[in-house]
View (spheres, one colour):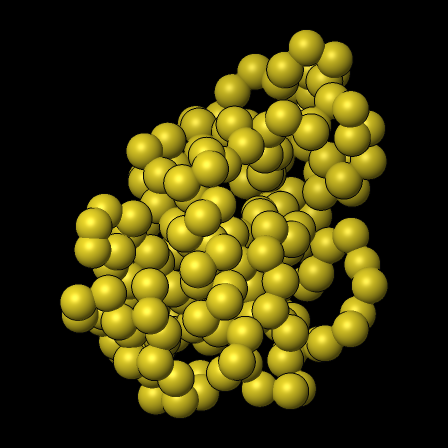
Length: 185
């Protein structure tokens, strides 16, 4: 994800800042080749994820699918709302409200948010998004580092801060919470 930037051609300037509603109302033809997120009224614009990123995301999804509890739902790349001026798109979420159809989920519906670090998003994924997810009280945060072997750390919210709960070894992540699982990355 790039730093806050000038909107792309066709996206109007908003000196007063953007709202989540305005971002969600942008026409798809203006946003299809990029990911647009919102932090405190400022747009964060980044290119669509690379194919390597998407392959890793697919492996992560396939690893989670058999172990995700029935009262939850796993979805990739959905809008998550954090009030009126924050809107993020985690690489993957596990929601506590299965089968709800919406254009944006409330942060309170997210049990786990996962981010795959990319060269253009490393600061946002490791620091900014982690802080926003913690502030929104999302119980678990999974940070995936794509180097070989793939590394992953699951953090659990404790006292308003994320503390490491599990770290992958040799491409496997063993979870005890939020549910028991072994994920082969």
